[in-house]
Amino acid sequence: MTTVATDRLELAPDPQLPQRDVLLDPDAVAERLRRLLGSDGELALGRCERVRAKYQVGRSLRVLHRIEVDGERHLVSARTFAPERAAAVYVRALATAVPTGTVRPVVHDPELATVFWTFPNDRKIAGLRALTEPPRARARAAGGRWARSRLVAYAPEKSATVSRIGERGRPVAFVKAYAGDEGERTHRIHSALGDAAPVARALAYSPAHRALAVEPIDGRPIAALAADELEDAFAGLGSALAGLHRSRVPRELLGAPRLEPARLASAAAIIGAARPDVGARARALAAALAGSFDRGEPDVCLHGDAHPKNGILGRDGVVLIDLDQVCTGPAAADLGGLLAGLAYARCVGELAEADERRLGEAVVAGYADAGPPPAPASLRWHTAAALLAERGLRAVHRVRRHGLRRLDAILETAEEVGP
Image 1 (cartoon, rainbow, N blue to C red):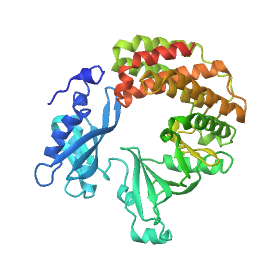
Image 2 (image 1 turned 180 degrees about the vertical axis):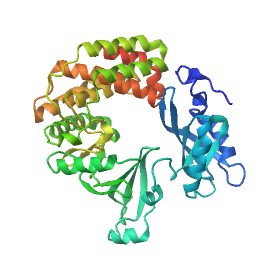
Image 3 (image 1 turned 60 degrees about the horizontal axis):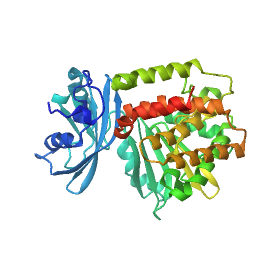
Image 4 (image 1 turned 90 degrees about the vertical axis):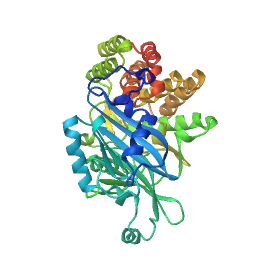
């Protein structure tokens, strides 16, 4: 098996996943795909870059790479399995695979106990070709409005989102296909909110395709704005969250609170397994947070994944998108998650300390303009908890090199903010 220097990834060795570092190295992956993916011999494979990873320590690894072959780009996802299972998964996948031109749709690498899928083939999401390529009959049924699709987000075995482009070159809908039935719950949440919250309007849900269509918002994602636009945008994001928190959604549609003490302990254990050098610090932080946990605040309808990519700045303010993780919990959980994201950006060198403070104050001020903000102590607790169980944990799960290198600083910031 090809070996890759583990210290480049800042991760401890994982005896259960010896192929991990090979699959996370684009150069090593390119060499294997060059030999495996060609339908008529070796591929003339150009650039190969890692787009996404989902790493479960000691259990599994999913990696998405973007490759270039003869000037065309392809997305190729990889999934590890136990050696005795990988071959059976490959046989089942091949039976339902759709053609992908000169690039093979599914391949098996026995040495790595890994199966690779070329998009639109996916282990769990069926019908991705129908999502990305509008049949003529369907386009006519939509009044001729759907001319083409553009893939805007893809998480293998989880979801894929496309922008459906109309004949005039503008989006007419965003459609998200799911591996499971999460879209049905999300559609019901949209329906329950109606016009009472600043969220994108759901257009339809197809159980057959497990796909949710949502209206396009005339605006720009906050994450794409220029620096001089961010302060007003973050204030608008705070105001939008306040509007969502005042909304009423049936309790049975809301997921469980995300930042409970048990989850903090689990996050610390995973971080410690991946990075033993910071394990004691992570466990001590989780214990301190658990000891100061206060459930005295009322629960509200939380977005659950509030960050700048999920806020669109339009003419009438910020509109929230991507309601898959809507859940219940104190208002400070959403705001604390946002503040933790700013602190993380500062820790990894993407944001100046003054800008972190300025944008954080804008979020809280925007929220306060629309309603009473959370208590400062609760906001600090949830910011520290999110730095551990969201930002720190995601650095491991998503194999974010900058986050892994600055993991000690991220935990130190959580200690300074929290109890």
